[in-house]
Length: 377
Ligand SMILES: Nc1ncnc2c1ncn2[C@@H]1O[C@H](COP(=O)(O)OP(=O)(O)O)[C@@H](O)[C@H]1O
Ligand SMILES: [Mg+2]
Image (cartoon, rainbow, N blue to C red; front, side, top):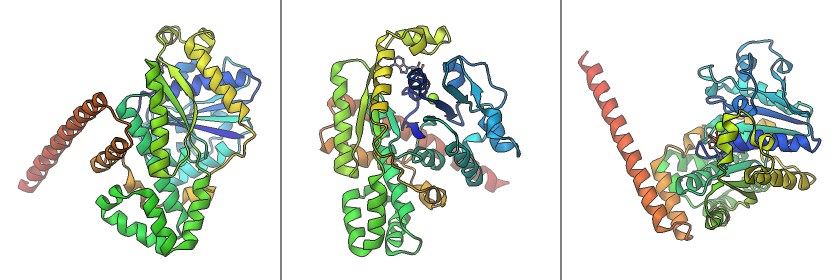
């Protein structure tokens, strides 16, 4: 079974749209497909598929002992396509425990299908990253806007760190080295990965080798969505360039999808667009991507982490760059260096950073006030 995990750094870029429609496109060619909604905080795949609101989903499976996975697999209106819904209404499902995650992964990997398509939540949380790394050739979706490409880049940077720390045995020199850097959060964010890897090679060749073997398994594939203009397509090669130069990663390109007004009409009709308007630009792009995936399905399917490694708990969660302002600045410099930014992008970024700064200030004030209040009591 091939796993197509679909991730993004930022929400609203079209992951779920791609997951649902790509699954139908693959199923139409006769492949057996299971689509699973793993956006456990914001499940909405059933809406896109046009399925009724499911009674039980991943939430029930995780929280009610003795629920078998078969109880949450549903038939769809499409032959060859089965669906596992997420259950958004269950609070806290986004923060599943490591034992729950292990149970889920084990059952998912044991499913019988040609493709398991997993729609993930946005961002780089520990669980999302592990689910993404179930496949070495996960799909990363982004739009051409600066914030989205930057977040896609940060997502991949986190994936590299995740693989790195999972490759080092506890107490090994490489592990200790990474720990020292981690303690000084700032130097970790500033780190230039190719140089870090060089240093590790020098101080701990054994750990380096393990990392080098594992990272080979990471060959993410990009989908650039919601293009408005042919010029937008260039964003893909810039992102690819940044990944190669700064992360030592080879990013494949699965294709571009233009923004298509038909999608709004499809949404209102409660039908997935590949079924509602198979001839639309959007549907054609999805069919093309499905063909490419099938074409390459015989290439060795890689997995950067073994099941065991992906379950070992590391403090890597603290590396989450998503909320880390420093890291954004750093990556921005990296993108600037390689010419991935134009002036409009810069203005867009500065605006969004000012917004984040204000949010941080507001939070700070809030914490300060509650601190003072508590102290008075
Ligand atoms: N190529 C596209 N053309 C038009 N609308 C799109 C396109 N891709 C996504 N959308 C719309 O953008 C919104 C966000 O998409 P969604 O798949 O829910 O994003 P995500 O799952 O990444 O949060 C949805 O309303 C969807 O219909
Ligand atoms: Mg979604």
